[in-house]
Length: 377
Image 1 (cartoon, rainbow, N blue to C red):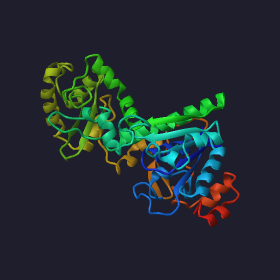
Image 2 (cartoon, one colour):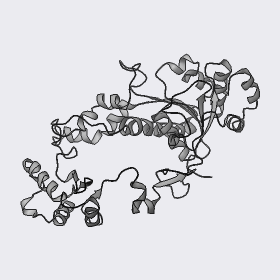
Image 3 (cartoon, one colour):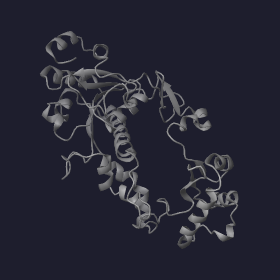
Image 4 (tube, rainbow, N blue to C red):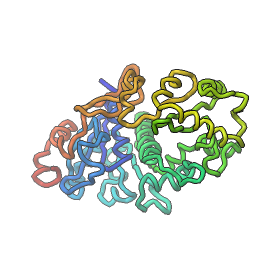
């Protein structure tokens, strides 16, 4: 046995972005996840294929969801599953005959996880969108902005993965746990707009308390504070400073060789002046020189590493933050469990590469007939 979700069976209907991320999390934690890829057709190059680490740890069966036999196969799998996750727009699964009503009729204990941008209802529910759109109407994108600059989207980490896939996985696990007590499944409606808004709960609290205003780049965490900022070094690289607490700020000033009497931490009108002085100091040394001076101290200052640098950092090496699967380096599962460790059971599969094996393991004994009929590939 490995992983706290060992024994949990999940059907993943292939999608891109947050859906696969949620399924990856469940698989990393030990669930047996079968990925249902489309049979035939070009698919989506942004989401499908063994190149995509998000598909790790689970096998793929190619099923034709436009074929009666393919749809029936998915419902048969639902009878054997604890959960199903899908990432289509509202109504698509219903039109296929695979919506929650049909699936729960086959298995009343099934948890039906749905991943969308805007949710299953509401004025925008049927509209297309991506991470940048969801975090914009959630109010998050507008808050990530320096003075005089346009908002900067944080890759697709907030909507797709934090507010989307992560919360879908949490919702599925919570509902599976409840179903084991009640004997009843339910629908988990995970919307990236709502998840992104939820991630900003603390910022809303600060705003309500008068500790945050709508002027960009003037607040504690949006580059307004000189002690929570990124500074360029003499070699064009950067250091990240997060010396929020007074004792850490004092240590930062000591290591920067600045007089604490001249830089009182909470003299907010002078923050722009402080930032200019801090920037001038950081510009006198390279990033690695500053890292050697600051990283081991209680100043909350660390080097800004690139994606290719991070795996070699001594802390990440010691903790095993990154791992190699099938010769390819990638982030390791998280969080950690003392008794049932999460593991990556295997690399990502090409779509349909495991159809016979995975369907056989799930008790489907007529795969050859289904293939001859065109229901699977």
